Length: 185
Figure (cartoon, rainbow, N blue to C red):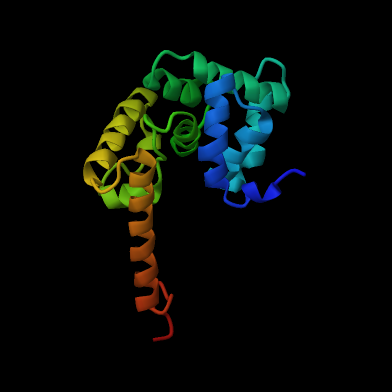
């Protein structure tokens, strides 16, 4: 019997199974690739599927995901991997970084608005030229590493910063009775 409960905690499935599968076989199938997409931004899955079909040589989702992830594996370094997703596959930085975080967790972390707020910079990186995005993204990664000393893994450092931002936002919302503009007071 297949254990479907492993998909309940999608991040755990991605970090414990999908990452290892990619390391072993050198590519991901469409199911595992789209688990990453859904984990980062479920709302984007149809748009990304369409783009993969349009840009892949075989023009279908299954072969496209294999082509995309095999292409990532063939790149010589982390800068080339990020550039490949940004330029060839036309991903924006948040999704590209999420994909690479699962595939190469020691080199990448998710570019996320919450973490950017905690670092007090890097907001709007995706609007810069691709070369500048890549350079600034790796500065972002180094700042995440430097800022959080309590954890050893890059992913745990990212989770800490995300959680800190989440906590601040929720406490602020509660403190203002969830009213952004204080209408009616």
